[in-house]
Image (cartoon, rainbow over all chains, first blue to last red; front, side, top):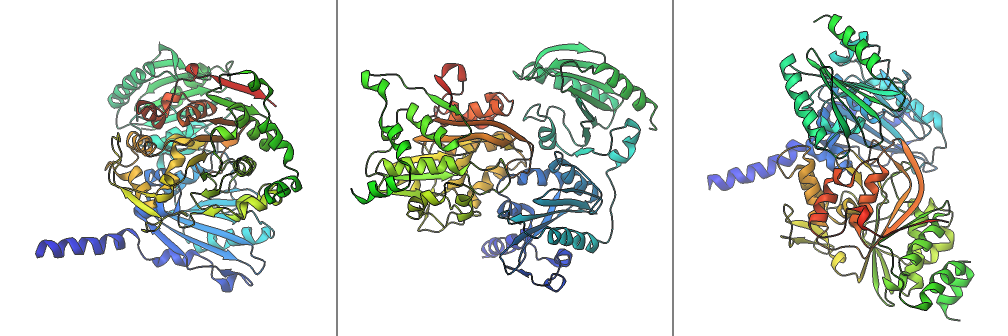
Length: 303
Length: 311
């Protein structure tokens, strides 16, 4: 009897634990009083934990990799049936929110128009502030009143009280001149969405930075210590050797070089407790001077 | 003139129909058909007609009086994330012309999707007659009228207890219409992964989380391949016109434009080609490897007869 009751309790409590009530996240949504003429077409929905898969048709995995907590989704419409969809993702912390913004918006232009950083196009606005990643988009592409989208984005940004901080790795690496558009990676899925090596986590990636400052990609992966970085680089080289996407795998100073399926040169080097990977996007691009410069800066950087 | 012919002529679609019914080369005996046909054109409707023509014509796949099920990856909004509706409209028209008694959309398709094509009005007479499995709308929830549970699938390695729409086993002909685009977990989402559109959300979540390990691409790829054992599409017509190469499957993401319509009875071949569109090897896409191992199709493009047409 006790077993049956325990089973019943688990069944009753589990969905509740996964799909939590809105609580404070509701307060980040603008009320209809703040949007004259507009209304919410349905109750805002909150999806927590694995219920994210109920909202996102595919693509939820990467949010989980970054540390997804919950999301609130709402639809606003005006009398002419213009629709705006708002999604506010609450991540485990501010660096995670920065990370999911940086990886999903890596192809867009970034500005400081909304929140800490935002991506603005004709069809949508995305921004990051504190532990929140916010998306606003026109449903059905009926963007007849653009100021409304921008107004809504500004309202939500105001409602998030704290700015939140950048990932430590991003702050610590200003010395590397990565530019302002730095993608923060928290796992192999994110790496694969920046540059694809292997579906297997050959770099055992937990924390990395990536950027494309012109002519090449830069990826810097952090490890606990130098020995770990060295060991993982050796394993990664072996995986690359066995992967048909890569050719011309050769020894290089403290690492290896190879070419990818497009003929782009790749240079990987262990520098202290980091693995640095450079991928040329042009066959004539010389990676070694850039790698040497990064090596110098990393070795001089405060430990 | 019966109603069919009357409407047919009235829509101005007769030229497409003539193209399909007449194949001078094939009057002179057996001509081997390609395994896969890709047509490069900016007229996607005509490209679709041409691709099917080169694969033997619609009558080879759609017998008169048959019930035809369409699975269309239409439930996305960003550019490069859904198949161009002109491809679907061309396929609908072909099936209608072949005398399909019923055309069923196996996953709900919004009116907005059709309206993205300038050819929408001319095809209203077909669209208005479509039978929609409207309960299969994301996130689909099991109900006994529309879904059944497959406790096991013959040959499946991982997948079991699949909640899948009943219609997939009831239609005479099954046509899959994916777009070949980026997916954050699987590199490519194309023909094989589009089959998840036949299942409930609960089942699809097990693809992602069922192994007990988060972000387990091996398990996800195996489940996708296993699902494709339920029923192989008779025909797959894929959009490689303009597609996202990052931030998939929903986008927005960087776009690549090839202006290709790709058709084949072999979904593995379609996805093997799709991998190359994303600068990957077919073997990089686990579902392609596993579906090949299941014997669903061919992943080695060098072993396929591929017809390339510049229209």
